[in-house]
Length: 420
Image (cartoon, rainbow, N blue to C red):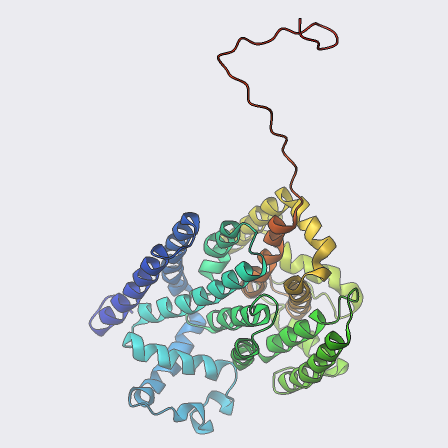
């Protein structure tokens, strides 16, 4: 399908104009000039990512095809496809059907432009990382904001994988809203934004929504240093909300339930299904002993000696560069790991990253799929890494007394330092 042809030209040009408009709005804002430059580069990279993802658009064609079938309804403001099971794929509203519904709405705006739809989904993902950036600023106002923006705008996986018609873009927006909603004003959560983020995540992948609900609950219980009566009441109330949410989301997802045996059976089945192709790896299992290997598979692989095609080379180099930068900043990360339980946002971010990484590592046994799915947790992972720029104790600098350079230097004795 050609990018610029007939009606597709209108949608493509419209979306490119939106990108330029966003860049101009940021340029006229009060953000640091380094951040402004990063946003321009990030927008350009996402356009390039959309072009690149069009060459590997297997799933995107499915969503695009079903989405176009809804355009006729949405064009006349008929939103019955959201409520009519006869119009759903496999009579299920979640997952693929919801993604196709979003694609239909996007197609109305882009005049069913193939390239324009890719640009629209890349923009949806961009709004998600922008929500993370706002959450970071509210949580760590004295941290170096440009460093975090650099991760969000320049990190290859974040501008490549979500820049496609598909679930990743919607999930990136949903998870970004979850983080922004939890941070809220910096001291209190914005429960409406948090609920919208969880609902959006649930509509695409209910099990991820369950993990986020569990992370929110954990954030209220991992710090026992400053318990008060009001805080205890809040923590109990959160449990009362989170537990039913977890059971509901897992019960309506492919997992089928929230009990240990059901989850274990689903993980084993899912890992076996993914253990195919050239990027397949051995399953890690589901016990406690499987956790370290699950973390290694998600955050460290593929190793450079496991490269067998261009895509795996891309992932291996990316991981090497990422850990090279993190190791160079190991002091600030070490400090964050010492104090994370005392900071509200970190009490959510650390459990959320750990839960997602372990679940992903146990659930998938294919490095190609892992490389794409781990992208969703990278913004939160980088938030933890860059939080240290706010907490690291700064060395005190001693200012030397001013000395007139025109005055001749004083001679000192060789021993004792007394002026001659």
